[in-house]
Structures are given as structure tokens and as C-alpha cells.
Image (cartoon, rainbow over all chains, first blue to last red; front, side, top):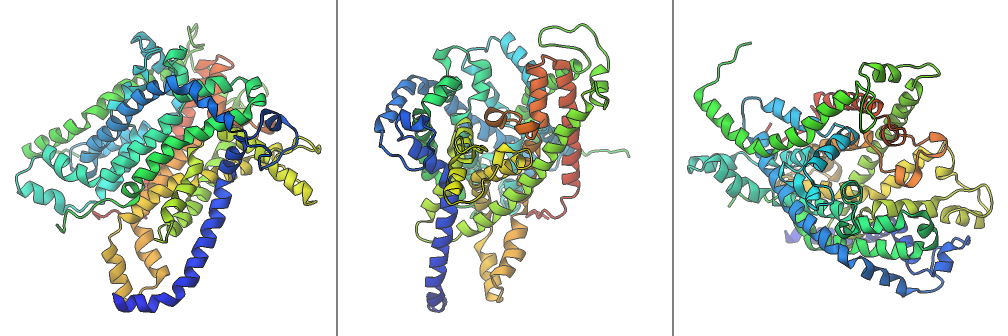
Length: 284
Length: 305
């Protein structure tokens, strides 16, 4: 081990400089829109509306950020929807992916294709019949319209993703458990599920980020301001084109604030998400 | 071919299906039922509240390439959508993979670098549309240009048309998609983390250089996720619709994707029957292309094989 380190020392300095320079370039390009949004959130209203387009703010109008107070009442609705979806969607996705990834059973290929075929249905085909169905269930203007679909496998793409990860787990894992007399449910909960924690978290976090910002689905089913989610309330205020032209600075301030919670979640779970699926089961 | 299954196989299958129960119920209620209803609507002149006649007239309309028919417009939308899917899938896969390979290295501050790369994904969709407009706006006049064209003007260079011309609008859209490349990158990093370090160690001892390790270990073992990304990118790309909030149908309908056309047919023209027929055509195309992808997925390497 030590020998390798000694050999590596010299090229490391140059390699490190290259890595940081490339990182910096990539970040400058990728972050350009975000930086512009951040800058614009500090523009005064006159500055934002002026024809003189510029990048750096000429004033630092921190008070634009006061806009968040207006949306705090909507936060509760968003949090309820998030809590239910972020747990049950990944969980049922793992549950349903398990036999498709690790069992041999009658009609497996057919079931897989059937599940996958549901992704291919253009959402427009589903929209109106689903709306009619939900309104007959009395789900319009109810938060339930936003979480009722959380318990049914979390969507084919989630199931497909979990399958891809479960298939890479060594088969010795289940075989050892079977020899120990475990049934399939025990194998799922004790052996397979703990080994796909990272995918679970990945799905939960994507779900969090997606739902946190989604306004299109709430827009269809939630019409009363008191059931608006945060994103929908924000969208409803700014989809009015005159507001947009006059207050892009406040729009940007709110948008910056909206990126903060997903950012924190991402920072907290980055290691678990990227750290790789724990395949330590075989060794220890 | 006649199958006889052993009792054990049947019992095991029942256990397997008990795991699939949630998705089976979910599919029946939230997919099959709407699919069947839409299929019925596609043979009627349903306008959202009632229908008066039934027949195959909606499908005849789609394949009517005459002046009165919708054929030419529908197939033009399909053409634009195909170009978009191929270009954006290829570009975002290649760039995402290279970026992920690079960000896989453990150097000081990598956590922050990854977060910064992921940050653009977190901008709310309808907000990013406004920001891109501010950045890339093009106008033949001195005023009304976005940031980039203002800067190019100051440098005395020619302006770029971006979304302002039918020739460059689609390319500009594919380019702005790259700001979201951090999303797919995260999944690739997870897949790289899944590869056993012992493989690299063994390869290093055998004297394999970086390129050999890349093409004989990293790439083959990340093919399941690459395949997932191709499938998802194709399917979601075919249904692309979100651009409507920022760009409408694009200049000279250059961004009039099939998803937007279906939406407009349904909700602007209230012709839900025709919209469902167009939707079904898109559905069939998606299924055909997906089957092709799965048929030619021999390059995907699963641990079990």
C-alpha cells in the first residue's frame, strides 16, 4: 500500500490541478442559470423590468426574500403529501420489484412487460378518465388526490430502477437465507430490502424533489387556495403574466428559496445515495 | 407448446404474485381503466362532456395527408419529437457519463462540487423557462436581447438566434437540457459505487491502465443503469410536454412536439376523441420502439448472467 503511495505522489499535484480546473469550468457553465437567478433575486423591481440586461445586481435588494412569508401557510399541505409519497412509493416499488428481479415464476416476462407498458402510455390518455374517476370519488380539492396513488408500486420506472439494482445483488444472499429456513417475505424484509436502501433513498429523494416543485398535477385537482401546495400557490401567483413582467426579482427570490430544502436533503443524503449499494452481505 | 407446472412452481408463483399485488391493483385502477376509457373515446367525437357519433373517423383524420386532414401536421410533430429524443438522449448520456466518471474521483471538496452540479436540477421547471428566456433571448433589434447576445454585441460579435429561429430552436432546447445533466449523473455515481473495488484492485495488479479498467470494468458493469437511462430518456422524451409553459409551440412551430399537439387538440380544440386517437398512435410508437430497445439489449450486463 505504502509503495503505491510513494509512486503516486508526484503526478498527483498536476492531476489535482487539472481536476480542480475542469471542475471549476463545468461548474461555471452548469451554474450559470442558477447564478443569474440568484443575482436577479437581488435586483430592484425597476432593475428587473429595465431593458438594460445585465448579470450582476446593481443594488442588493434583500427585502425581495420577504416573499416567503406569504407562502408559509401552504407548506403544511406540501409536507403531508411529501411524507406519504416519499415513504410509500419507494417502499411499494421495492416490494413489487422483488419477485421480478429475483424470482422465477409463471408469467414473469408477461408481468414485467405489462408493468413496463404502463410507462409508455402518454399521460394525456390517462388524464381525463382519471379526472372523471377522482371527481366521482369526491377527491377534487382534497389532498388525498395527491397521495392516493402512492401505495401501488410507485410507478413502473421506479420498479424498473429497483429491479436493475436488485438483479446485481449476489444470489448467495437469498440462497443462504433459504437454507436458514427463511420464507420469501423474510428474505425480502431482512435480506433484500436492507441491501437496496440506497435505491430506496434515491427514489424517496427524487420523489421529494419532484413533488416539492410539481405544480401540474396539483393544478388539475386542487382549486381552492386553502388546499394549494407551496409550488402551486407560487405558480398560481406568477402564471399571471403581468405579475411576471413586473416582479421577476421576487419570482427569482422565491425560486431560490424553493431550491433550499431539496438542496439540504441532497447534502444530507449524498453519501448514502452515491455510496453504492451495500453488497457486504456475502463477506460478513 | 403445452406446459405442465409442478405444484411447487405454482405455490412459488403465488408467493411471487402476492408481492405484485399492489402494482396489479394500481395498474387496474390507475392505468387499465383510463386506457380502456380513452380507447373508447378515440372512436367517438367526445368533447370532454358528451359524444354524439362513433366510428374510425379520428384515425382516418390522422392519416389524411390532404389539405383538410391533420396528417401532415401530426407527422411533422412526430418528426420533431424523434429528432429531439435522439439528440437529447445521445447528448445527455455521453455528457452525463463523462461528468460522472470525472466526479467519481475522490478529491477534496468533491461533495460540494457534486452538489453544485446537481443544483440546476433543483430550479423549478417554470422558473427555469423564464431564466433561459432572459439568458438566451434573441432580437434583431439592439433591445430585447438576452444576456448572451448582449455580451456578444458588446464584444462586437454576431448574435446567436437560439430560440428566435426555427433552425436553431430545437438545438437550443437540447443544449439547455444539459443544465440538468446532474440528475442522471447521480444515478451513474450510485451505479459506479456498486462495482466491487476488488475488481479494480485485481485489474490494477494485472497491470491494466485507466482506459482498460474503464472499458472492461466500469462501462460493462454500469450498462444496466445506462440501459435504464436510455429507456427512460426515450419514453419521457417522446412525451415531452413541459416546454410548452416556457416556449409554447416554438417559433414557426419548431417545438410543436406531439405531446403538445395532443394537449392542444384536447384542451384548446376540445376534440378529445381526436386527441385520444393521436395519443394511441404515440402509445403504439412508444411500445414498438421500447420492444426494439429490449430486443437489442444484449449489450446490457447483469450480475446474474
